[in-house]
Length: 182
Image (cartoon, rainbow, N blue to C red):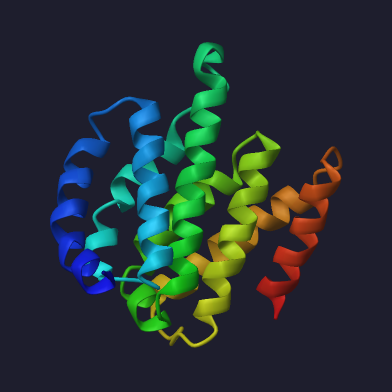
């Protein structure tokens, strides 16, 4: 069954990628849930299939949730689910795969770290931890990697200095900053 599913992934992800930017928040939420499960079941899967969703994830995480109070909950849930998919992707793929797309993968998470809603910020920190765990084996000689690490450092340092935060967020900040410094 896993081999059959693996054969369906390219066609499935191509169709989902085409629909993700056009569909409602609830549909995109379902797409990210399905993708997260695919990554988990297949213990990774084909890298090219999942990289198709980076622009959609960036768009989902860039949506301003604080300006549209009617869709506040759904946009926040979408952002958290998109970050969950990214976290699964970081956890299940090798550092070689991630290094090729480091610039594309850093931008959405940096955007989420800057979000005002603490649950999104907290999930972004956990996502960032997974990326850094796999990045321990990466070659950081290129300017793209250095830029990514510096951006993350600056954003987290800015957020760590904020006094008003939920205990969960404070704990994840400290953990994230420790991983970054190591």
